[in-house]
Image 1 (cartoon, rainbow, N blue to C red):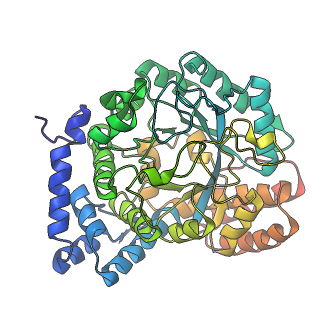
Image 2 (image 1 turned 30 degrees about the vertical axis):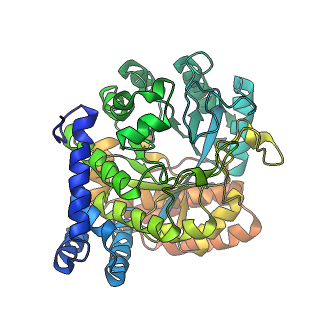
Length: 482
């Protein structure tokens, strides 16, 4: 019998089934407890503190009560506070990135992924280094600066040496004014030594989705392959941090298991990282099961509707206020617009989830990991963000300045966003407008930059940012940052 202990390094103690079940029972018993719900909402609200704000966050039990709540006006209050928190710590910036699929060779038997070993009719492909360069150039020509690389788990076809070589290749591609300045990595759980090698290669965030925290379901959904080992997978973030990676990204695949169970497990994992390492997850992603090659999402009976999905995102923002939150092109424009209002701070744009997809004129489907719902171009996504009042940001300054882990969180909590991340976002947006944007996007973008420059509190910072933006306009000088 395992006992719940957020400071334990054993998966079944920091993600404890008995604690989750007790939490869900507590949430169900209190879902209409107005006094308790009001107290939790008040605790979650950001409080002005000097030049910045402070947020208490919520425990997994408190957040689960809000998720269970069915009182319409309280749900609306959750959404309002979630937006307040996002504005307080991230402002109106939305960071943009794209996934880059390196290989779909995989030895696992995951029932929800078309890359599973038993799928004999999907085309298997692994990019050569020349093909990686071509993909990167295609992404740079769109305007991307930040990638998340993806690969199936296959020690023969996709060893760590291959991943490291690809990272080196990506950072080495300089095409016109294009550069990939941050490579995040989403690969299978590995050893401390391999995480150390990834850190030395200059990766940004290490991302690993848990898929499901429900152990019985996890084992059933991963019947074969190394991913079948629940503890090794769940404890991966601790090994990553031991290996020196202090920016890690969590996520579950909503729809595989009952969402309230997954939500509690996700917040408990964030609490565990904070308790053990002193810093929670850098990002939390909220993907849902989607149709793919031989995968029908209807075979999983735990699907969630858009309103429930929005509520989950808002409750994550209330519970873990300082973390970045990501929604991908798995979701439609309409869903992404709604989630932007309740705490999302990063979105992918113009994504192709197939191996080698960016160099193809027509979107290929034969090696896709999942269907892409939002198929707009990057320029259309950038313009859409600005039209909805958000600054599209291609900034990677914090990562390259060493402001990661607890140093980034300190910046976030101190209220320095408007004097650091805000001008950085505007300067990277200016780069995009000069180098890649359509005329329509340029017109909207330059007006936004002029307006947003005036929101920078420090006159000296505003002056430097304005000067740098003029240099971007008038020359090929790039990559200014605070």
